Length: 192
Image (cartoon, rainbow, N blue to C red; front, side, top):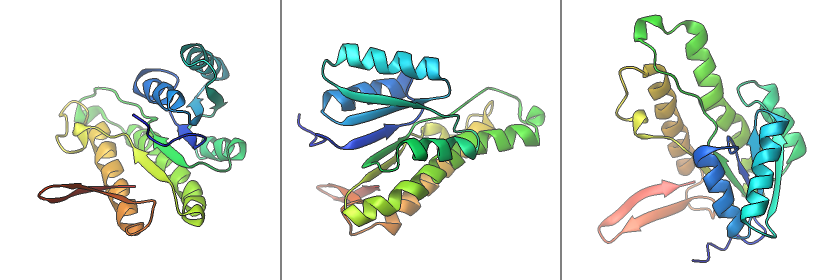
């Protein structure tokens, strides 16, 4: 399948392992210029090396930036001022009884899982609008709809990601940034 991603600049946050790493590797195989992101230089270098070995000739680089802080996204966009595709995958989770979730925990989860994506989308969206092409994807989960009782703070952030993605889809409706998904019975959803 040709996803027509040749030379598209793609940023995948939280991509040194797991789902993010798999996404970055797949997009590199499709010919995209992929930027891997993680918190440490060592993990980023290891992920870049792994993708380069798995996909000979891949255009892959990396930026270490801790997206749980406001400075992390600023550092990342200084290193990568433009992106055609932003995949907000960075996130944290932990099981914890609701009564034990402190204000600091709620804020840490919101900063990491929600604000990181908002900060990056806010930066990259104007360039996508100017080029009349781009994609912003928030990797959420069913936990945004079916909130796990042992991870209510995590579920709240996943619901917030869904809301932000939906709002961006509405804000970019009718452009090449927002792509409506359809079935035979009508519209299903919009992708930003």
